[in-house]
Each structure stands twice: as structure tokens, then as C-alpha cells.
Length: 207
Image (cartoon, rainbow, N blue to C red):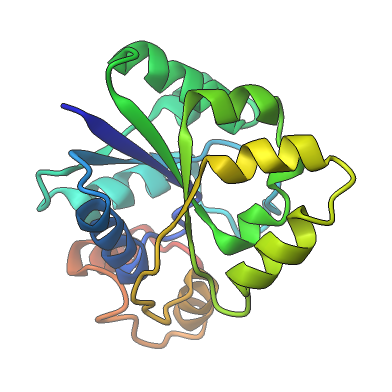
């Protein structure tokens, strides 16, 4: 195995947009594996409508089981406390060793706040970032204006050297919209894999 990408997120719930993005990134960058890492307690997310970690982990497993190149890790959930990317990357760097190229998939929205992440200067030395588009976020503007005009230019330059841009086909699916549809008793069929849909209804999540 030569290359692994970590795909972190709340996956609240996981949907076809996540799956399509992960598969396109995997094929575009010729990755051996994409590891989905559902977050425990994410430091940048509100908790009000966040399903329990065990539910999000099980839904992610249900959604990815059919792809042999997808794997799900419970590391952040098992660790407890807040989930920081540096801890996750250190864990997988130790697990896979130095011979495996480690990537970290982030959305364009996360790129705006990445300079504030815990131990970011250490993080950029241990993995490369694959930045994927998000609706309403212009990657070119973010890279040109947010970073190149940064007061921390040296750190920003080092960070950008580690960034690969994945121009992926966007599926306009939102976990927020899915939760809203569930709460309003509307169908979520074809937005999430069928086992995930059944799990949400059976566990009475988001109602």
C-alpha cells in the first residue's frame, strides 16, 4: 500500500455526496484507500443536532461496506474529548509508517480556518491536503487573497505547498437539508444509501 487519504467529518448523516467525492478523489489521485473518520467531539461544530457518535459511526459503515477501497475508523470516537486533526494524523502516521503517503481531505470551507488548527505547522509536515470544492466557496479567491495576503505568510506558503486541489463533480446534497427533511417527515430516498435511510428511521434520528 502506497497512499491513504483520511476523510474526516461529522457524517451527520453520511450521504451520496460524501461517497461520490471520496471515490472521485481516490481515483483522481490514484489512492489505495480512503479512510472515513467520523468525529467524536469536533471543536468547530455546534452540537445541538449532532447524532450520537455511535450512530454516525454505524451509518458510515453501512454506507461504505460495498467499496473495498473504503474503510471506517473509530479512532476519534474511541479517543474521546475534542477531535483535532493533528492527533488523528499522528495516529495513522504511526499505524502506516513513513513509507505510506498520507493525505487529508478537506473542504474549501475548512481551508479558510485551517491556519488556526492545532499544531498546523507540524501537521503540514506529516500529510498532504486534498482540498475539494464546496458550494459558495471560490478556491482561487481563498488561495490568492486569504493566504497570500496573510500576516503569517511563511506558514501559509508552507501550507500551500502541501495542498492539492481536487476538482470533483459536486453532488448538491447537504446533511443539513437531509436532517431538515427527516424532521419534516419528507423522503430522503436517493439522498443517502438505503441502509442509512432505514437506520435513520429505525433509530428515530433527527426527529
